[in-house]
Length: 326
Length: 133
Image (tube, chains in turn brown, blue):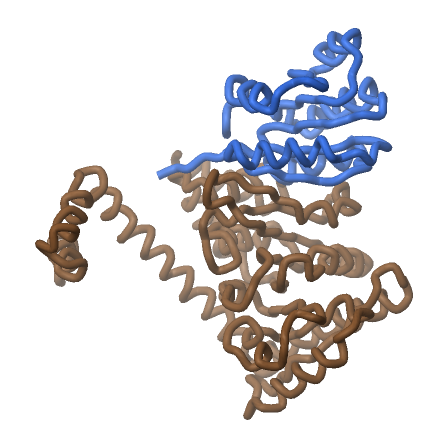
């Protein structure tokens, strides 16, 4: 595809054309050659949206919270993009993307663009295409982009590289106090939600999180992650108030990032990750493809099996062959 | 290297809360290696068409057990056309009398599957008739 077509596509997307945008996201997911060239023309127009990530265990209530977020943001006339990630089967490569079920009341709103993504083998809780999909929605002029990870456990922290504000959604009754001092997902939270807080164990979970936070020496920008308790969604008044409180804190976190000049750090973090990925796919991926196509990969694996070589020597040989020293 | 995957939406239009069949199908499509977007019960044709466009699906599979397929299925096709998305294949299934088949075909429903159709035959139909984008 020539560059003119890419420029045209990028323009369509910037004007909010959903079909072109969603197809570009698809082509990125599918690794279609040329899809990245369209991103090149969108990239200069990104960086305006507030990107908010939600992560937490399966069934914790992430999609339902996103649904309420969208309603609240729409009252303020904010344009919304939402990316919902669900897992790909390691056996068949298929996936059931079911987060959308909770968001269908917004389906006809032209200012709400919801796109489901399958992980396609990515292990960090997102899909490889998520970063670029955020750029696409950003360039479309969305004010807020909500990103929902797969149901996570302890370790899937990829979300922190792609969003400005991370919400970790917890529910009571999932474990003892040792869980709260472990490394991983609890460390990346900017805002905690204790969802389903009408259930037993909420007080205990709250205290454990407070203790965990009390042990920190300091917080970047002085932002101590608040803990918002959200109860029964069918008790409309209380639920609505908690959602408002949550959104105030999300907004507060963003303002704190801007005020304390930390937003740049987050954006830089994303830029580093993206550059890394781009280097991988421009440098490593073609080499791997050549090795596989030439049968060299098989030859090397055979050598390893016969103990005639080791992985490090093989890699060094390949590096000598493909990477020129300046 | 491009790795194309078929995207299919399984949707239940209208006032019909029986989604066991739709969920079995969603699972079967997953096992066939498709990416399945499931939107739940009680959807309007408008919601279904808008979601299909946003999700860039190749196929919309409609399930209806309430008897309202004569209105609901053609309406989805119509709305997709209005969104310039008539390249999306619409198929349907459920409790549908044989004498309604032709009317649905005429309205742009590409295939109709009724009780007794095997899961394999549905997947095979999709493989034979749908070009992955």
